[in-house]
Image (cartoon, rainbow, N blue to C red; front, side, top):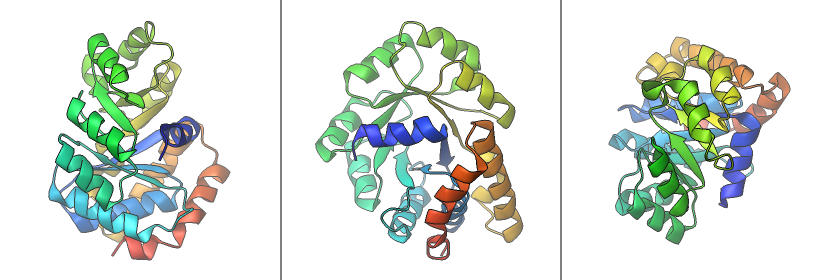
Length: 237
């Protein structure tokens, strides 16, 4: 997948959902709910084996043309990069600058959202071919104010802000110049380990709220969700 395809979706929706947990069933159910509610960029992290399994299951249940772009996060090695792409990842996300992952991704033809925190790291990520710079952990270094300062010398670099971004923070990050925000725990909450109807209904409501906060219209979210809805039963198995 060309980097432009991923960046176009992030530019339009301004939201990347980050799924992290140790229960593959729950993560797979979460991915299906997010797709059904209009979230088109979904990252399943490899911080546990459950992430790779959930990625594999979700990718297998999504028909071509669904509009949902699945990625793998916390990719640290070439081997993880290959395993993620084999499981269905269409892009990779790293927590920091990872030259080996960027090199492997180039060989595999997939874009990378490369983690960086400082100006030097951002420069290195761009030089190594990152599709965008993932500012992480954004909240720990000043949040939107830090992003605004960091963007000043890099006006043409797409930044994805990730880390501790609550619903009320979204507008500030976008105003500071973020291409999109990545949201994990504040979005998933108990659904990362609990696939009960109540937990998934609450997740669906939060997903719609985050999309609204980014400026995505209900109609747009609904259209994306409709495209994915036919796979929700399969994906949640």
